[in-house]
Amino acid sequence: MLKRLNIYFKEMYPIIPRFILGLIVFGEIHFIVLLNNGITDFDIGIQEFIGGFTVFSFLLWLRIADDFKDYELDCRLFSHRPLPSGRVHKKDLAVFVGILIAVTVALNLIFMNNFGFFLFLYIYGTLMSLWFFSKKKIQKSLPLALVTHNPVQMIMNIYIISFTCIKYSLGAWTLTNFLAAWTLYFPALIWEVSRKIRAPKDETEYVTYSKLFGYKKATMFVLILTLVDIVTNVLLVWNLNKISVAALLINVAWMTWKFISFMKDPTQYKIVDKVERYTYIQETMMLMTIAAYLIFGKI
Image (cartoon, rainbow, N blue to C red; front, side):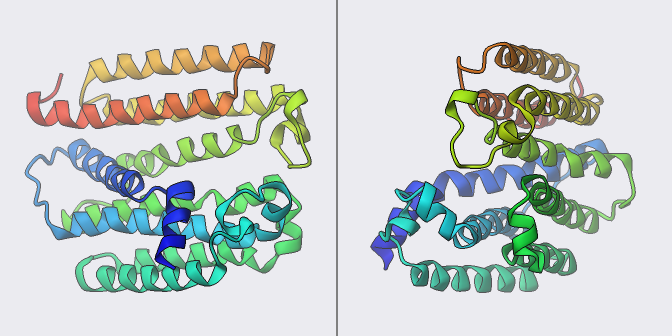
């Protein structure tokens, strides 16, 4: 069983990189909220570590839940993947998920200050795994699946924000919290749509946004989302570091050019590859902004 699970993690969800990502996502939102509230005297302990682990654990659970949900489709279109190929068994993943959720629940119940928000996050995740009890309707509609499933990223952001606000006695209904809730929601949405945009020659039986709406309209939609996303980032770092503002704008200008270029010739590259590069650069800049502010103060 352990060998089979290792195959799954290696191909579908590399443990160490994704755990680090969980810590980064938690830390980025946590510290952005604090710095925008003028708090630089941090009390970092086991709670922050558990918060990062919860992000990692939750996203891992969603990954496995998706493989269960899409098993029949994957057997037809992605038979090389660990689960449909038979190299990993459903029972392996079911046992692992049971242990993972139990550990995550226990840690949040014992150590965290926002268990209600944690429950809301996992209830929503459970409903997602069950197709909100409307599998036939949602599974057939790519836009409906996006509308019902993608908000989970924002709910996860709110889980992080709630912890920060409770721990440091901060107001909940503020512009900073509103922007922070959106700041990692948009990249997830942009990536989700972009990975299902293909050149006409690359379309298959798999349903994509480019097949439904045409690659130009789908790409334009993602471009608009990207421009809206950069506004939230700029507003969050405006009072922290003006150099970061300039860097963010340069990055989004590069991504805009890539979108326009793709709409002119969709055969030159996969747009999702450029989106991933843009997102990594953008989130790295956000982290560097936090570090620079802590070291040098406001610039």
